[in-house]
Every structure is written in structure tokens, then in C-alpha cells.
Amino acid sequence: ATLHRAVDALKQGRKSVALVPTMGALHEGHLSLVRMAKRVADHVVVSIFVNPTQFGPNEDYAAYPRDEAKDAALLVEEGVALLWGPDVGVMYPDGHSTHIEVAELGADYCGAARPGHFDGVATVVAKLFNQVRPDIAIFGEKDWQQLAIIRRMARDLDFALDILGAPIARDKDGLALSSRNAYLSAAERKAATALPNALKAAAKAIAGGGDVAGALAKAEADIVKGGFDSVDYVALADADSLERLTEFRKPARLLAAARIGKTRLIDNLAVG
Ligand code: AMP
Image 1 (cartoon, rainbow, N blue to C red):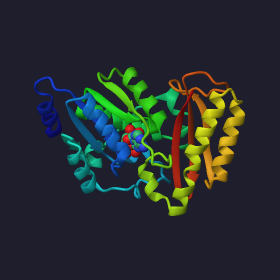
Image 2 (spheres, rainbow, N blue to C red):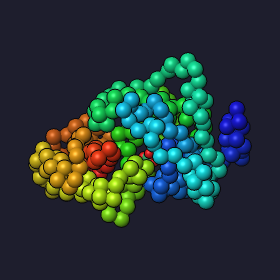
Image 3 (cartoon, helix red, strand yellow):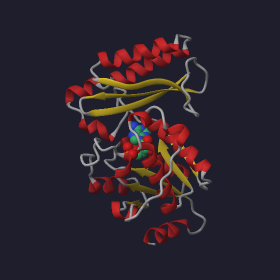
């Protein structure tokens, strides 16, 4: 009720509200979403919720970086109107038993490597939409599959809001910014550029008419050669349906996930 009153106050005078959902440990990538939100709406609401249901049993839920005081200070500086940071017990009261599965888009890629992950994401994002009731919600293209799933969920379930995707914010050396980069040792951080570099080379080869399977295999080998321990997937996908492509046609996206030490990193790139 407190949140609804606060959002109603922001909406007075037909003002629009944009929501930026996050799990905190904010970096420039998150802040670029906040800045986009400011450009497209009158008021910005940011949520911070480290969502336990999107972490697998052997994943980093307990260790996930959390610094709410620092995050709040950054958001004040950005002129954010409201920070919504519910407790786990508020989000999932005893007996919570309703879930959303976006079946078609959630099975492959990160969905295959992280069973249940996207059901957790879709469910919590639907709840955030109902809690905050924004006019617009902004998600990063960094999580391309997640963005596609949320667009499909919003369409399928008739959420009356616009979903916008924001471009990937990268460090100077090309590594996509991520809260999980904080896990990397200095040597791993240096090696991690192998992931965006391999995608760049593969995108160039495929857009130039090169063999798709060959380009994907080379990218996978380059990622391991660069210092990653294993590759979950490197794939060429239809950018909207996420269908795997064996031949290049637009709109296409290269999607990848790989593990270095204890850290799993993802990245993606438009082709052509
Ligand atoms: P997270 O806190 O990791 O759940 O991310 C919250 C939102 O920020 C998601 O919509 C992400 O896609 C987005 N995001 C995270 N990192 C980046 C980045 N480097 N560039 C653009 N968006 C990002």
C-alpha cells in the first residue's frame, strides 16, 4: 500500500513512470538504463531485489554482491524518484505458489544451463510490474534472452506497459559491465576480454558471408584459448524468436556464455 501511494503520487498530473528492475551492486550499465528511463518518462523508479528463485541450488545467491547504501546514494545522484527494495518475505509470502513459464523462449541457451532461472525471472518481473505499475520498463540488451522473454511475457499476459531495451554498456577493453565481474581476479579480468573479442570476430566473419558453424566453433576455441575454463554455448540466433540459425539472416544475434574460474559470464552481439 505504501508503494502504491508513492507511485500514485508520482503519477499525479498524468506524469509517466519508468521502472528499472535490478539486483543491485549497481554499475554504469545499470545507470545507463536509469538515464534512458529519465529521457523517456517523467519519473524513474528503480527496484533492487536479489531474487532467490532465479538462482540454482549451486549458484551464487548468498555470495551475490550487495551494497544497498552505495546503490541508494548513486540513485539519488541520478535523480531517481523512488527505490523499491522489498524483503524476500514481502515478495514471496508463505504459501507463494504461482509461477510464470515462458516456455518457447526459456528452454535453450541460459535456460538450458540454468534450469528454472527464467521462470524465476519472469515471475519476479511480473510481480514487480504489478507492484510498481509503471508505464515503461527498461531492461538491458546485455541479457538478450531475458529481454526477449520479458517482451513475450508482457505480450502474452497483456501487461499494459512498454518494454524498452538499452544497449550494452562495456568497459574500455570491451568487456560487458556486470555485477559478477567483481568476482574476477586480476588475471581473470584480463582474460575475460576473450569473450567479447571472439564474438566480434565471429560477427564479422558471419556478416561477411563466412560459414556459420565454422565461425561459432572458432569463437568457442578462441574463448577457451583466451583463458576461459569452459563454454556453455556460442550460438547464432534469430534476434526476436531466439531460434538457432545455421545460416545467416537478419535480424541475427550472437549469444554466448562461458565460465572462467568460479564466474559465469554472458555476452551477445548484433550480426550485420
Ligand atoms: P541485474 O542487476 O544484473 O539483474 O541487471 C539489471 C538490469 O541491468 C538488467 O536489465 C540488465 O540487462 C541490465 N544490465 C546489466 N548490465 C548491463 C550492461 N553492461 N549494459 C546494459 N544493461 C545492463
